Image 1 (cartoon, one colour):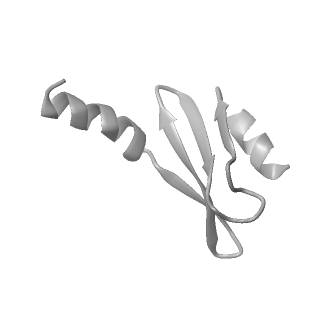
Image 2: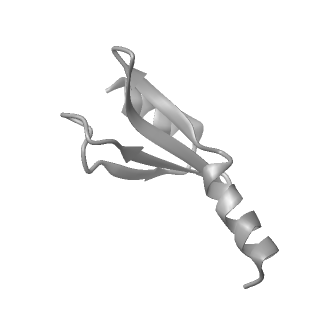
Length: 66
């Protein structure tokens, strides 16, 4: 894989990174790649080790509201 191809591939993940906050603390982040939502919890009680994949924004929103 060339350097440009590698950068493009990684940018799919890190270019779309968004954070979820709870009480002004980052508790998780979300990547959107090819229409799939990847949710990763941070090292925070209740979120640590959480890794989920969602096909739609609605599914992700429903999960977060729970």
